[in-house]
Image 1: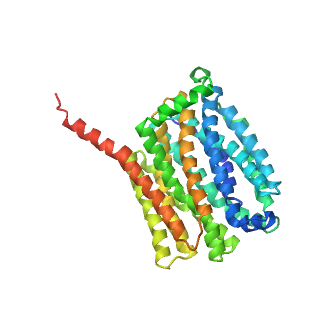
Image 2: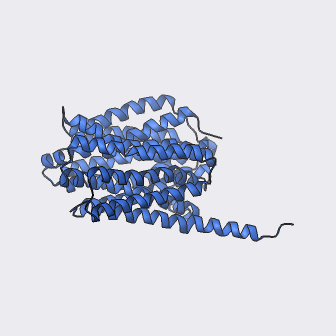
Length: 406
């Protein structure tokens, strides 16, 4: 059983549109700060606001799709995303922008949480990992190419245009998806939505070692990119004097590592044990984080080398991302896929909120603070995976070899 290409292409477009909103405004941070009368660091709080909303609302969107089907929930989410994008563009004060970003994230989360559930509905095992690797490209490419397009919009227009662009994009994808996307959860497999029972469902998932191991691994591993997109405008533009246009180009290069890794996963996932690929990805993540810190400590950090370091980490994330999500969801039945996807996304975005909030609040005197944060979160990913998955898999294998054969 595998997901068809029409479904993958539609989900890719939806996820790509929702992820553009995360970073398209980054080159405009100084302009937003000047117009709203706040500091650039304060403007960057709209990233953690987006992420915490994304994390929390997934916990509702996932179970709603288990009860009412995938298609209506994902389309309603896109509609909310479009309206909220207009709200961002029309904001005249920081609190209005933060509130609109919160609503924007609430709509965008449906495309990812429900999109992963659709993959679980239509594929299993290595087929699911392969399909998820294609969607992972949208999640990696969107936030990275968005600053470049944002910088292009800033020249003829203003920072408001970056949010108008996401509104137009989401409206187009909504119309496209409404005609193409098909429902993947039959009525007989749906579970009634009971708010009182959500806690029980989530507690049950939290007690599943494998589910939590894979979910926390990708959460920690992805944290390195969240640190970068929050701190990089301050470090590269504010401290190093990089132009907004060049900053956008540099950030646009970052998906190269993620795309390459995701392609490698789609090819090797049927030939190499998935856990081996994940372990390798975690090692690349740690290497990139340590490289970032060492560059700062030795005084050799340049914009080009800073981007090279995040490329190494992002390559590791590409090896980890799709595999962890696919194997995490494979531990539950399809009728609980929405809730499982939502909880995994909550952990992922929740940690992203924590690290981006810290990166926005601390004083950046060089790229060292960014390198330390990237090193710590990737080390947490590697340690978590080794302790919760690899160790138990090795112990199970030893026990099986110890059982005498008849």
